[in-house]
Amino acid sequence: MPHSLVTGGAGFIGSHLVEALLARGDTVAVIDDLSTGSATNLDSARAKPRFTFEHASVADETVLRAAVARADEVYHLAAAVGVQLIAADPIHTIETNIRPTSLLLQLMQEQLAAGREQKLFLASTSEVYGKNPKPRWTEVDDLVLGPTSRPRWAYGASKAIDEFLALAYARQFGLRVVVGRFFNVVGPRQTGRYGMVLPRFVEAALAGRPLVVHDDGQQTRCFAHVADVVAAVLALVSTLDASGEVFNIGSDQPVSILELAKRVIVAARSSSPIEFQSYAEAYSADFEDVRARVPDLTKLRGTIDYSPQYDLDQMVAAVIADKRKTPSA
Image (cartoon, rainbow, N blue to C red):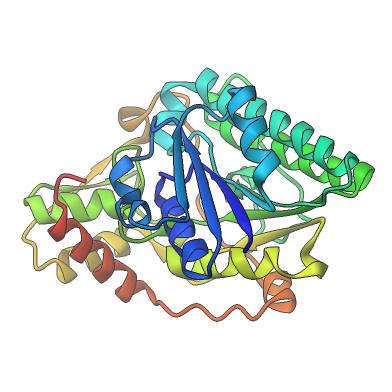
């Protein structure tokens, strides 16, 4: 049976991916330092005999080398996450995103040189597009990042470097790589601790606190359920034509953040008010945001059968149900 390695597997998306891999019959190993993930996210996985967990940094070469040597497929999700964390600690963001990816690629190239072909999925982000003004972003669009004096853009720049590295290994050595740019993935187990908007709104609504909307709330985002995203990841890694390519993964149905807040209040049957906060108050005086973030999914749909099963109201309901079950998450 296939042996899959998931870095960052104790995280929100990573833990759902681990469960999907186990469900299809894989032996699954996870490396996670639990800096932003949670061991409880893997409670159901721990009950499976085909699962192992190593509490370690992906930057630990000894640990990573041994894990890569056993893997047939590698899903690299370990990264700095959340706008709040990125704005507060840009050095951690840059180092966490670039160094382990470079090490992982080197180790996988060594395996390839020894005659062992593996597959790699590299989790990237819509943040790489920066503030590109197009209404919908395609995978070949320019990356329009802000100045280096504004740490807001460190995350997108560091993930773009990850993509450049992975695609370079694909071109130069023939490493089987798929890059997926995630757009606002939501669902059970996601925490609002690092600024993720939907769980933050739900936690506030259930506690009767104000839902804090940044700026005027008219900025738009597209939300995709983690189960739909994980299904797309597995399909892409299994598709030969996807190798060496970059894909937007998510939903292409935009909603304003203010409208999202209103939907959460209604769905949670909450009496919480909505309050507005400037980006300067929330993050820093030099923080920049992107007004609209909408992916073009033409390439994804042309490569795999991508038919999301969850609409926005179902996603909101799923997060509410999860937070009611585990309110301290």
